[in-house]
Amino acid sequence: MESNSADKSFQLPKRITLVQGVCLVIGVCIGSGIYVTPGKVILATNGSVGLSIFVWILSGLLCGLSALCYCELGSCVKESGLDYTYFYVAFGPLPAFLYQWVMVTLATTVGNAIKLIIFGSYFVSLLGVSLCKQEGSNLAKVSGILVLSAVTIIQFFSVKQSLRLEVFITTLKVLSMTLFLAVGIFHLTAGNAPGVENFRNAFRPEELDKVQFLSIWNAVYFCTYTYNGWQVLNSATEEIINFQRTLPRAVIIAMCTLIIGYSLTNVAYIAVLGAEEMTTGDVVAAKFAQKVFGSVSWLIPLIICASVLGSLNGGLFAGARVLYSAASKGHMPQIFSMVHIHRYTPIPALIYKSSLTMIILYVGNFESLLLAYEFLMWSINGLSAVSLLVLRWKQPRLRRPCKIPLPIPVVVVIASLALVLLPLIERPTVSILGSVAYILAGIPLYYIFVIKQAKIPGISKCTYALQCILQVASTSPETLTNNTKF
Image (cartoon, rainbow, N blue to C red; front, side):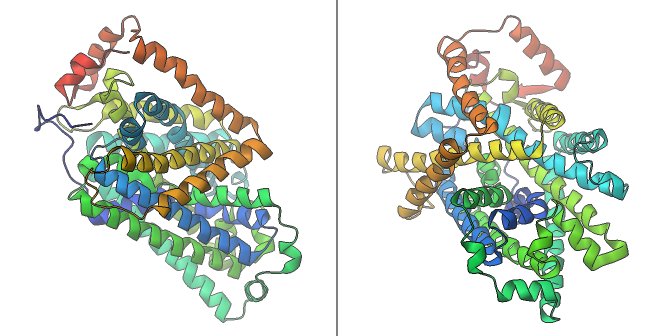
């Protein structure tokens, strides 16, 4: 997995600092989740305030341990591409191909579509209260498509401007969560009845006795969806300044901030609304705003829209680079391994990711997309921890600037197995079974296009035409000769 040094002047330049890295991780994670899932977590824990907060902290710690695994992988495998590169080094080309098949064509686009569904719902609520309930309305979906187009155009022209946008929006997110927390503390100290009563009896036995084991699994899924996104920096290690120090520091700072921020934000929700009101309906933040801010409650949907915008920006940034890395190794069409000859941005990959996200957005719904997304992500997180263990065994002398204790990847592997196998055994929904079938469908594609090197008729002419139209070129001379599978 050595990088090609034949043309060092034509590569993705190093532009990501520690502050930008922290903002990128937080920006991707704090999207729509914290504004829609707290009520679902309370419902899954049968209204137990103490148990719900415990699940939020436990889920954050689990995601933090997985993030530490990614830090070691990112420090010893020094290429962009995220899990694709790690699987390629640890397991070989087939698992790497299956990863990029799932991530490029399904997982990341599903994740972005979920964000846009929430964005559209809150954006429409700014236009009128009656429209707020029309989560699947055409107007909500069109607004999501328009904002996705705007973010894509920004990333077309400048990575630097995209990162500046991430810093600004992340600052806005942190300030808004701080405001939520301040309001929650005020209500608690002022003796707000619902909040005080809920925290005074946080672990009621009558509530805990009725909690089902699978409901806890469901709550963890909702929480980890909200934390998901810590992998974003590993998708662009080649663009991080002094990445060996910056990567682990940025991830640790970001994950600690998220665990504290999410837990305290839930405290604020409960202090103002109470557990029972949180479980009636999905738009928890809007209810919070109506109770606290009254006539200016429209500010909260506006902040949420900005929050989702930042998360979408980071998600698109990472997803395009996974596709770019996979295409550079011949596992996707050659055109996706190319960047703009002047702006050095992966324009073909960005166009593909955005177009596919728009399609999924228009045909999908929130619940089924979230279940499928979390199932796929924990399958990948578990395999990433396994790849770390495999690399320690296969390449023990490999330089690891950020080496973590061995129990951490072991815990992540066990937890991932539980999160993946439980729904398959106990509650095999259509979306989860469909995800398994989709993964398996990648095996014949690998055999046809990678092993047999079959070519799609006319693909060379199409690639050349797109190069001329988009003004893109390969970053590696070897790609032009080796990348002939499609």
